[in-house]
Length: 157
Image 1 (cartoon, rainbow, N blue to C red):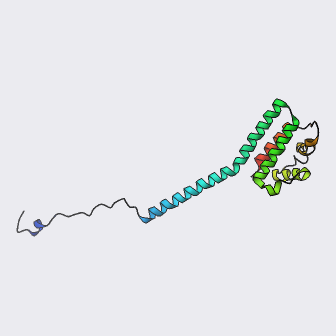
Image 2 (cartoon, helix red, strand yellow; image 1 turned 135 degrees about the horizontal axis):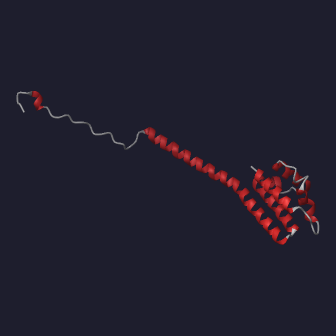
């Protein structure tokens, strides 16, 4: 060092400290909050959507049990009663008690046709849900009735 040289007496340059990554800027906080809200809403929507469709899965499972029971005991009256009861329960679950509980006869079959976009209940094998239930030894096309019931359940929103 030269004492006569004023530049040699200067101290070295001090750099400022590095910019910290924490805490993040406000924009990152807002983006994180927006993502968390979006994920929460998506999960909630999926759960609600799944819960709304759960009745169809349960109805198909019960219908398969009815079909197995019919194949083992060949009791037409029991199968008819079980299918009719299943259709009523499914309708009350989805459409509400006030709209479906009081329906019977042709009004019941028309409701099933209207909600299933079909004519299989009022003009097809579904007719046995009204007249055959009250016969002493009913004979009804149970396998066809089970198939149109599966189709009706699948068409429900």
